[in-house]
Image 1: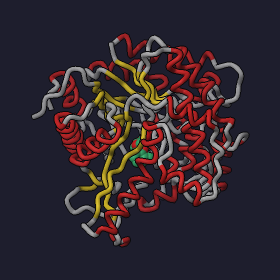
Image 2: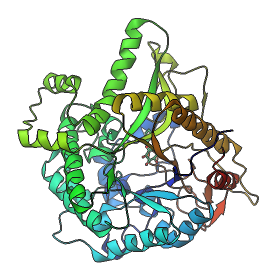
Image 3: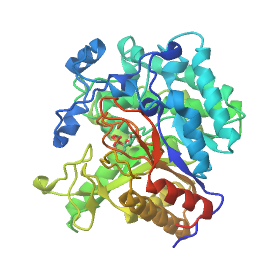
Image 4: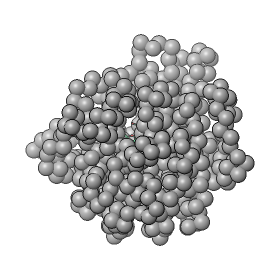
Length: 479
Ligand code: P53
């Protein structure tokens, strides 16, 4: 048993595009998330191909003629049921809650001169409802849901004009909620372009087949926007705390062969540290600069921009952690995993989607991140998806309890090792639409939502066994 501190923020996390639905209500514009289809014929080993946005899939999505469903359009009705959901958060004794503000509710096309008051009203109500129950809101400004118009008209984040368009949106919400929200996540999983340039940067995957090259221009614009939003935010309220998030997957070496160890280190540099380093040290590490050279990219970073990046680094190290992987020479022995095709680790179990469950890896990672940046950490996402069937009885999700319990214990071990940690928000509050596959079947919630992959169902919420367990943890601070 571990005792958690009363100061620790402990709660759940969701995103607007996976939960809200009501995609065309009150003047909301179309976002890139709503163009990701659910494919009923998908073989799970093809997830990495399915998640790529191609010209063909995009045209089909824009037509939306009934061939496929686009579940992020209907979400799980959080837009209409937020009061009921916030009450469930309060009853679970969580002291914080993380969600995002849908850019397309505030600036439907992204380039309007004035924000959409009706869209802001929804977040006024949601944030006030959280505060009513003394739940600390943690707000993600951009969670894979930019206005589609910014892709079509401007070409996504590779266009530097996106920086000011993003800042206009961000400034609107930072000012509006300056006395109500303290914790801000300017970008969800800023390294998302590693996995999907569509979600991360609004670039079509078939036009940007490699993760580097052109997408680095987009990433640079995102990094600049991150530094600039922190600068603006500090001018609005000096107590704001910022932490853009990085999706982390710890990589082990399959054996002690030094060349494999080197390969794994390089893999971590490329996929994780090259992002954290810019966010927390305010400049590109040398190995990223070398990559720019290798791809013949002359980003023409002005001295002014260098200064802004250097002076406006994040306050906390925000990250998501779901699994670990193994760097191997044995390409035949890879997991089937969504995004994360990696070597199998015989010491670990996998979930149905091939994600290898590794609580001790969280402790290792927290130690490494704290050693490297010496800033407080915030675990913004951690959780596990299961295909849970509707049932008249309560869902007894002991596997989820075990997963979260083991990770919370390892988090506490890391804290006892000397790591500073602000909080932990589990993914996710209730079952929501999966980011990667737009399916409902991959359920992460403490709360069951009666809805299938096509949006059929009452959408009623029922608590799972894990809800009661997590409530007890939040109340007693014992895990
Ligand atoms: P789904 C990759 C690796 C770790 C986390 O993912 C990731 C991804 C991208 O899929 O994304 C985060 O729903 C993301 C959430 C997402 C969650 O992980 O594909 O921030 O929006 O839902 C789980 O199983």
